[in-house]
Length: 88
Image 1: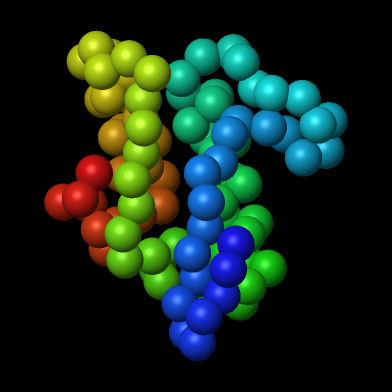
Image 2: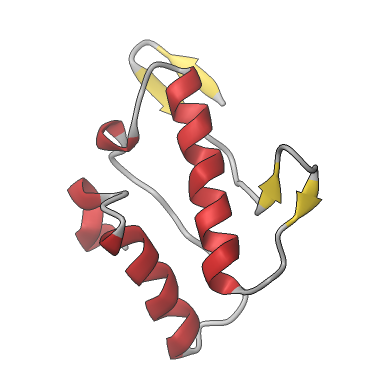
């Protein structure tokens, strides 16, 4: 991540568990949850939280309905990015 003034720019994240250093590959729900945990760790380390996020871009390998709605459900039901829901 790069911090400039009061802004933090975080590059792409993958579903890697930092404790095991292995990729989580047990499905879109677990992968999405791990990526969000990784992002949260970077935010916290920088003195921020998801409430400070103003824009995000999520790339999916497949745009079939189940993947999209699964990711959207995890992000919205866990109240992760509540301040930017229209952007998802």
